[in-house]
Amino acid sequence: PVILAIESSCDETSVAICNNGKITANVIANQTIHENYGGVIPELASRVHQQNIVPVIQQALIDANVDKKELNAVAFTRGPGLLGSLLVGVSFAKSFALALDLPLVAVNHMHAHILAHFIDEPKPAFPFLCLTVSGGHTQIVLVKDYFDMEIVGETLDDAAGEAFDKTAKILNLPYPGGPLIDKHAKLGNPLAFKFPEPQIKDLNYSFSGLKTAILYFIRKQEKENPDFISEHLNDICASVQYSIVHILLNKLRKAAKQYGIKEIAIAGGVSANSGLREALQKRAEESGWNVYIPAFEYCTDNAAMIAIAGYQKYLNGDFVEQDVAPISRMNF
Ligand code: ATP
Ligand code: MG
Ligand code: FE
Image (tube, rainbow, N blue to C red; front, side, top):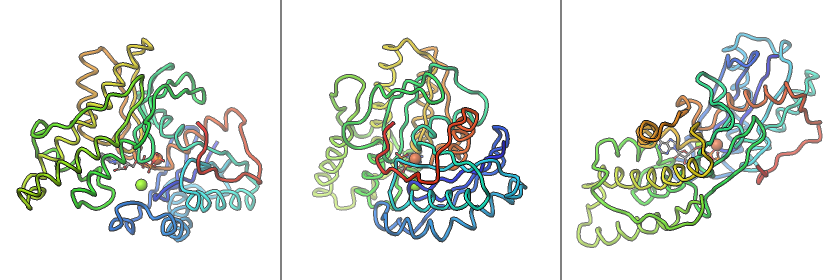
């Protein structure tokens, strides 16, 4: 089957095409309008989605070299995400499918982040553990099958991506700050400054304490040296990244031990982080894990992951009707 997939849950408008499980187009339009606000402004995001959706669809059809008459289904992100953003993608998917008389496939965005591992080789074997680290979520997921997944640990407050982005905001870096912290971290000393590791039980995470610790540390330093941030930016970024990566991997190691699983994957925007990727590789060698790290373009939001999830649902005959609506806080 040839499946067209639409992703619009946050601030990326993306359309992909999947032909018998192979991705033949993955167009992503980023929104730069949020840079100066320190976060995504939902009302602005949905308006930009409306401007982008038609040209992005057209570009995807051109890239895949298919005519819309050759499509067999339309997949879309139903949730979780910003309601106004989701509405643009869902409404477009519904009208597009209605006009072309195609079946509709609804995809959970968090499932799709994990299923991005089934786009390219090597593919993880079930059951595997996936650490999903994104802008809105931090979850350790036990993946038993394509759609048989269980969250075994998650954040009790901020997501890992939020910890990166909020730290970047404290450091006066534009949104989203995660990639910028990564860039500066490469030039700094990860052991320059030490931040406390949260003491949370089970396989859960907490990142709000770290954010506060960083804020107070910077304020204190700035009292003595107003140029502290600019003079030590690389070391601060390297140290913050080191802390976040350590917190993430310690619980992942605990989960791997508890479930006796050596197939370990990471997913979501923060899996693009070079510190996390390196530390995971290193830990894999120490622990005998087989690790799966997505290609960069499939870490942050993209429609290729929606297409691959949609393809599996298509094979299962799992379709939705025209009365389907987006769900902002969609259950896992
Ligand atoms: P969710 O998937 O939870 O709904 P989202 O879709 O907004 O949230 P993603 O697009 O998967 O999240 O990821 C975006 C997040 O990834 C942002 O917080 C961004 O800062 C972070 N990020 C992207 N690249 C990097 C990087 N190299 N280092 C650290 N963080 C990064
Ligand atoms: Mg984004
Ligand atoms: Fe996402």
